[in-house]
Image (cartoon, rainbow, N blue to C red; front, side):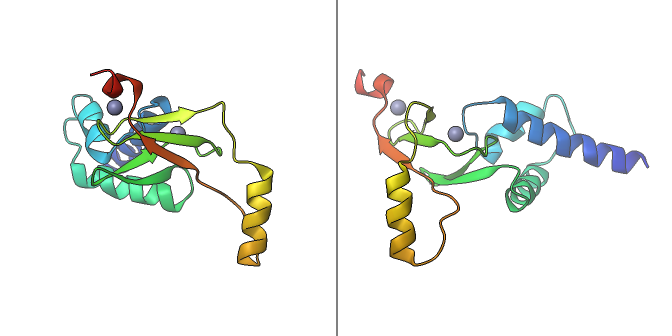
Length: 130
Ligand SMILES: [Zn+2]
Ligand SMILES: [Zn+2]
């Protein structure tokens, strides 16, 4: 019984952590945030839960940035910017994927388009000013 409670507590903590941050974290980041709070948490548990959440559509993966997979707790369609220098991932809320682009994609694939991940890469303002 106690084991089950603990497992659910970890699961919830990981999901909540992801949904409350805008840094688009890696598994390591989530682990570092939660470890002081949940001393018996392992990195493997974080990885397993993230993979599960991704499968269930609760979070999404942005792919790898500098070799590390990054996650987003916000599954609503939005556009991203990734700094290739410092690895920072930002949401670009003022841009949306143009309908026209979706229509063109649908024509091109011959099927139906359900989603689109638009992702810009470049150098962030902070890195550019260094
Ligand atoms: Zn940067
Ligand atoms: Zn995002």
